[in-house]
Image (cartoon, rainbow over the protein chains, first blue to last red):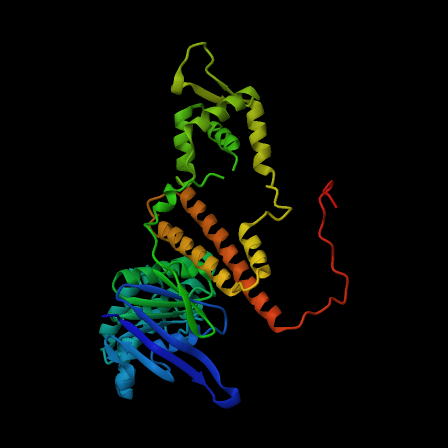
Length: 240
Length: 194
C-alpha cells in the first residue's frame, strides 16, 4: 500500500472566463521510504499538487488517499488530525514561529496533538540531537543561520513518527552546501521509512529523489526511470 | 584534460614510476577518469623528450619500476599551466544546442517533446551522480569535487533547456518583433573566414 496516492486529481480555480485549470488528471503514488521530486517551471501546478497531497486543499475531482484512507470521506476533525499526526510540511521560507525557540518549534505539533509538554520537549530534543542541532535547541529562529532554520523546520516536519513529508523548494533560499545538507536530511528521513515529495524547479535538488516526475501546465508529462547502480558511471570512459 | 600536466603535478611531489603515476592519477580524480597505462608511458616519453622530466637512465632496463623526476623546466611549465585559464572564449559546438536548433527547422517536430527527452536524460544522469555523492562519505575530497563539477555541468545544460523551452513557447505565442536598434556584432576571431 502506498503512503500517498493521488487518483486522477484535477483542480480548477474560478469558472467561466476566469477559469484556471491548475492540475489536470494527476495520478501519482508514493511508497513508504520513497522520495519523489516533482519538477516543473513556475505556474506548472507544483505547489497546488503539494497542498492537495497534504489535504490543505480539496481537489475539484479525483481522490487523495493518505495511509489507505480516502481524505474526502474524512470529517474535518479527522483531516486536521491527519495533518498533525501523519503529514509534515517544509517550506522554502522555513515558517518557524519567531516567538518560540528551536525546540519549542519542533515540539509544538506534538503538544497541539495532546502530548504533555515535558514529553513533547524530550521528543523534540531527541530529533534535534539526531540532526546535530541539540546545541542550538534553545536559540530563537532569528539567532539561527538559514541552513539551521531549515534543518529545524525539517525536524518539526518529521517529529512524532510522521509518515509523509511534503517539501516546497526546501533549499531554495540556501547556498549549495546548506541545500545539500537539507537534502541529505530529507533522504535520511525517507531511509527511515518516511514517504516524501519535494516540489522544485531545481534539478540539483530533484536529483536527490528516487524518481523525478515532470509537471507541465498542470499535467504529468514524463518521469525518470531508475538506472543501473550509480557505480555504472565509474565504469564508463570519461576521458576527455 | 591534460594528462601531460596531471603527470607533471604528480611528479612535483617526488620521483615516481609509471604504474604508480597511473594509480595516483585515478585516485586523484576520484577514479572517474580511467587512464590507460600505455598512455602514461607515451606521455612520459614525450615529457622526457621535451626536457620536462628525467628518468633513471643508468642503461639498465628497469621496466615498470623506472623512476621519473620532474625537472626545473617541468616545474616552470606546470606553474604556467596552472595559471593559464582554459580557452572558453568561443562557444563549443554543443551537440545538445545543435539538436534543439535543428529540431526547430524540421517540420512536424514537437520541440517540447524533444527538449523533454533531453531534460529527462540529464536529470537521470544527475540522479546517478547524486547517489554516488550520497554514498561518498568514505571517498576523498577529489572525488566529491569531480562529482560536483559533473552535477553543475549537467545542471547548466538543464537550465539552458528550461530557458530555451520558455523562449520558444513565447516566440510561438507572440508575433516577431523587428529590432529597433542595431544588434551588437559577436566578436570574430582574428583570421576567421568572413
